Length: 102
Image (cartoon, rainbow, N blue to C red):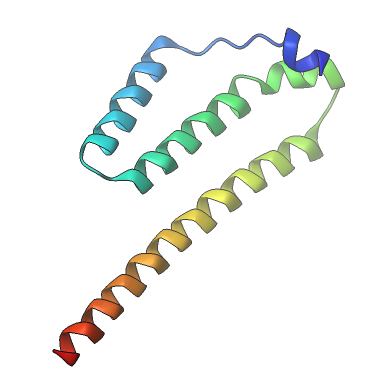
């Protein structure tokens, strides 16, 4: 727990501005799913790119750990996108089914 309390991370202000503009516009236009994916990608990016040097300094060579972090991040994004598209497809098929009954 000490590692989390003492770790410092610096994020470029332009990335924070882009993140806030992208996520705010997604939520304003009711694209909640896209906003969540954008938020995850930014946080994943900040955690991986900006903190990898401090992780390597702290724990030595972490090739397996960083690969696992990258793999899990891409897996989460892939599964989320798959789930979002599957849910949309199910909504369309139920709407078609309801329209054919009427």
